[in-house]
Image (cartoon, rainbow, N blue to C red):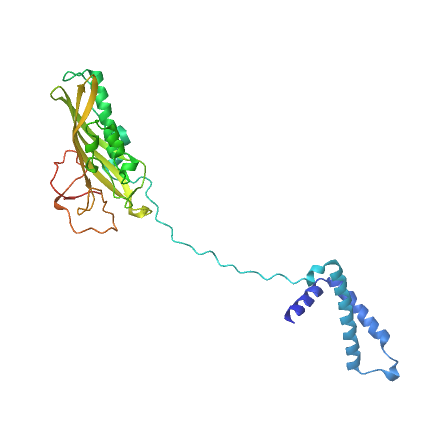
Length: 308
């Protein structure tokens, strides 16, 4: 009933003020004409009742006229549907735009460009061209050992083995390359920072290249950009370049890398130490060393680090 009353008043409100005045005058006139002679004049209460009836009839006629032009007034308005806002999920913290920012690695070269090697020169019976060819193979071996995506993600060191001397291919092990334990780590960025140096000297009937490089990765647990850490590896080794049967050969004399921050009680894989990961049973020992010190003496065992 409340809704009908409201719509009735709405209909009445559609009638202009002038029209309402004319309706009242017409109703009063009709009441006077309908009044009986004075000898039979009804009471004042009766006259008022008759006037009210006429007024109601006039309003109904006017309302019918309004509905003829605005039938939508009788159409029920659809109920307003109250919708709840969709539940909000907690977004993952964004990874920093440059994970190397604020560290010495920010100024390092990206990728293989960081493997700087000496200029080729004639040495040990080899021509400058032959030495240059051998140095190019050394750079390719370093790239396969420390930058190859498949090897880094725990795959077999096939890229390195394919470049090694034919007599060494069966001897290639994971200890010669950087390889994260499968399923534990992913790169936070495709950029890998490299800085270091190499020396070239005569060795027997050929040349020896000694290398020391810092290779820095921004890594995180799978799907956890809020756990990014910079992992610094210090690669050291030596390569021999010599000629044999008219060919330039490169022999891996030694090669290996120390990494930090990592767990100490692990296998041949690299297990980065993330902020939320289990520290393990074995901790680094000794005074913390600076992993960005290119000439830091090589320590024995798992040493403490001041890596940031």
